[in-house]
View 1 (cartoon, rainbow, N blue to C red):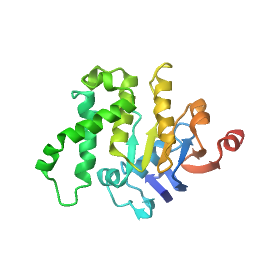
View 2 (cartoon, helix red, strand yellow; view 1 turned 90 degrees about the vertical axis):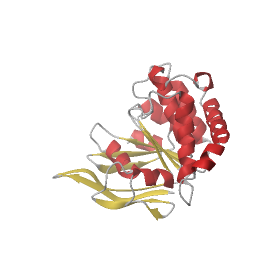
View 3 (tube, rainbow, N blue to C red; view 1 turned 45 degrees about the horizontal axis):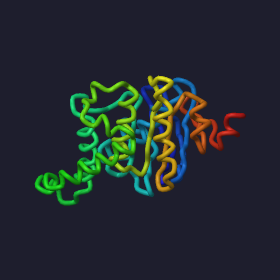
View 4 (tube, rainbow, N blue to C red; view 1 turned 30 degrees about the horizontal axis):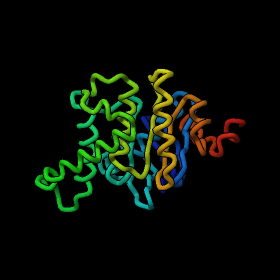
Length: 239
């Protein structure tokens, strides 16, 4: 479903990601690991479009996305959660999710933005947002402003926004970073729920090897921007 071919980026004389080729099949969760500075987040940024590759390609279902920006790649089916939450802090939890649902509807409209149809579908958008909040166990906080939420709930909300976008590829960049011990299991349960779907790809950058062992179907190891190992978790961890 997702493939990178010889994906490379150079910053001056430094090659941060060096000709990384990987293919990711639907129904799998791949953990991308490596030491600090290995190029993991940079590789994510190249896939999602935050950075423009010096060379190489990114393909989704055979379509070359390499020339597209972040927004176009999102509408094509790449969903990304970041190390730091990217939310609307002064809006309510429900409004954050409803806007993500609405963005998906607008992005799929082939003949431009129809404000009347969006307004008339307000109930449908809100209903879909409520269903997603139920799925992530945040319905009781739907009227809370995002700024008032603890960090763990903000991470859960970011997963809710990803679900609202209904991407083909879910990309999680250290989703448990900054979370307390009590908050981590809730987020991992959400990712486990996504894993039950067999029509999506899940990519996970994570430093915590206990999380990787529990969730990953496959591990890809980057070091100095190069792919140095790729395989089943037990084999890669033993290497």
